Image (cartoon, rainbow, N blue to C red; front, side):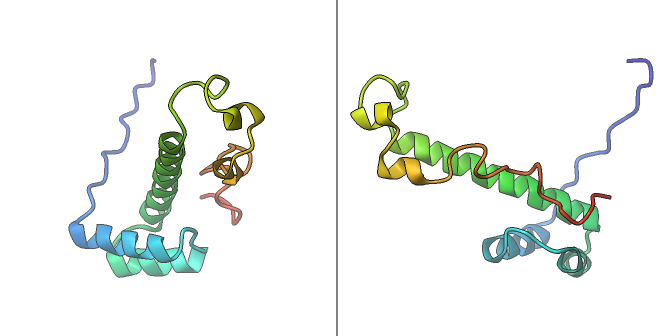
Length: 114
């Protein structure tokens, strides 16, 4: 396009920042604003960096879960093969694998985006 605006350089987190973020994510997948501010301060990051990292991490987590579900079932199309695929009623189909059940990182931030 005409207005060539450079996108912000990708942030590279230190090992200690990453382990702090990961440890917190394992305990708590969603942070409130004060919690996010505290974590950002503790790790020497901006609040936006923490928010973005958590959004990306949740998406990564969701994709990994979907891959595991696919590995659990056969990679062929669900119509051919197992009768469970035809009826859509196996124990593995009760997990929230539908995009509507877990809306991912879209409606993540109820307390107003900045």
